[in-house]
Image (cartoon, rainbow, N blue to C red; front, side):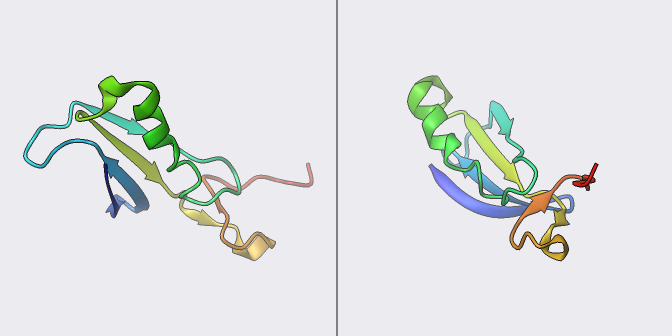
Length: 89
């Protein structure tokens, strides 16, 4: 399984590729982290899913985008969000 970073649109992503070079990607799995997590929070699920469902290996590309909003300014350094939440509501 090959891991690399790539910018897709405006999102920094970690990509885990199970597809051999030169072969077409049959499946793309995009997993988005939750509020306050880092963009790498779910990366460990790629190998776990392949272990539990071996038919994914060799045909699947896993994409783990980091949300565009930094939460550094609200006291959560290294944390990301897809949209702002009113934590006092």
